[in-house]
Image (cartoon, rainbow over all chains, first blue to last red; front, side):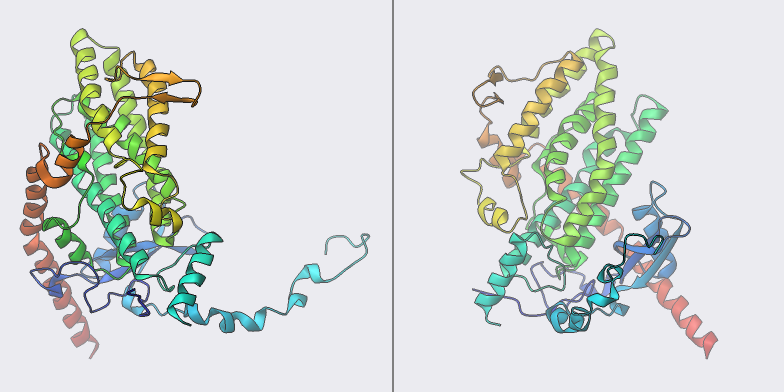
Length: 120
Length: 315
């Protein structure tokens, strides 16, 4: 059975053909891919919502407005080229997050206090 | 880890309802199935704009025109959400679009039927979007994270599509005799093709088994189709119209409506490219892509020029 062990980075476009037919015009006309982050209202973080293609950052922001905020879903938009996103590796998640796994004393519920102690 | 272990680990995560994300290891066939399904779904949204586009300039009022425009715009957006979800699997946008244009990738056959009257806009909203929603609500829980998230966004917007369709038919159903006849005619033409949207019967569907195991799909074609029939039989009463199926009958034993046999010959003919509008739809897409070439090139050239200028200003 054929299996992929190759890694794909989020939003990254691998060079090799992976299922689609190559475009007759070649990939040279493909606008870069951008990841879109939207702040839904003042006071909240920007949150990843998806991606889109655009020739430059300004066009990416305008397209993001049309694609991701048709119903006033946002008050602020960030765009970043997908190729500039670096990600941790899922296959290393075990050891990567391991240092936090055995430190239950970092959580308030670790401490047993008498019921009379309020507001703590 | 050996391939066998990787596959077991993968299936264990699926069974434990843990979503699969783009960076995670996945079997080649899972990747391919998702690329096929998500890109076809994206193409359906994009091609689906064409039958409705036919009526934008002929809508009966400014209100209906604004609604139809907003709906078609949503469909473009839905196509884009899905193309971007598909790209996370390692296929480029141009490759997916090229697959559509060369006929390698399919789109929902429903869009190969013509829109002959204004009432078709209502019937499409009620029946076609209604059928799509049954499938899409299920897909909000699909195992591939980016697909599920795109579906959540789509479902939020899709409800307006179905409601405006039903409301539009409701208005016609209270109108003149000619309007009522137009309403019934649209329902008659769209009912069977809408039932075909759920795909072949479970006994003949080639993708169902593995897709269920991988939780790409969570309900079978026949389950969803039955759910849709049960729902529509009740709704059509509110319109004072009928569904064009003499075999529709409540079955107390099954607790579902029985319905007539779908013309599977017609279904396969349309899938194979011999529907009333297959050629026209594909040609419209190719024409749009070709005529947009200079825009894509000009925008890329403009961006390159601006970047160069910014670099020389900085130096």
